[in-house]
Image 1 (cartoon, rainbow, N blue to C red):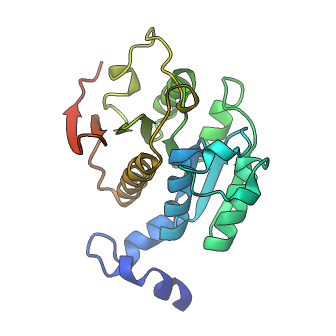
Image 2: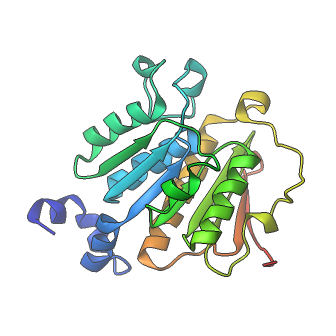
Image 3: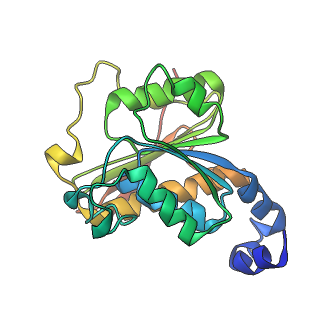
Length: 235
């Protein structure tokens, strides 16, 4: 690391769990963020700020006025722009050393393997079961760690899937009816910040080799202000 990097990341480097070796791991890491919405906003800014060296972002949506209460990556002037383009500009301002690849498209069966295989870790914050199962199955097949999170209303969850651990199918049955999206059921803005930050921290722990939610799901009730961690059984 050069002197500017040592200064920028000084408060992290002084942590015994990080040090210069851990910070280099962050600088070398390649993380794909699936969805640049409420969770993606916190993931992208947090991971770029703490020094993750390469971020991929995949999302085909454009910024809408109703996004702004929870998608704090964006400003009023971004309305109408592709989310990944606006996010890329924000990262360039926040940490120009972080390189960004944007994919203004849906993740589907035709591109999932090609896109995901270029990354060390995937952080999924999408809003539908079909994409979640696709991301899960692709990561499991490729042996790529996945940190998955979801929010709705006042509730959120985070889990980590690694080789041999319980995966998303241990949490949600493939035949489960599609859950309502934020557009349909609503979501409290600060909850996205809470769960997105927890997801970003877990991504950092995976990079550093100290993940805490492997084969487990952390469930947060933002209305009752409670949190619990449940261990899942691998199939």
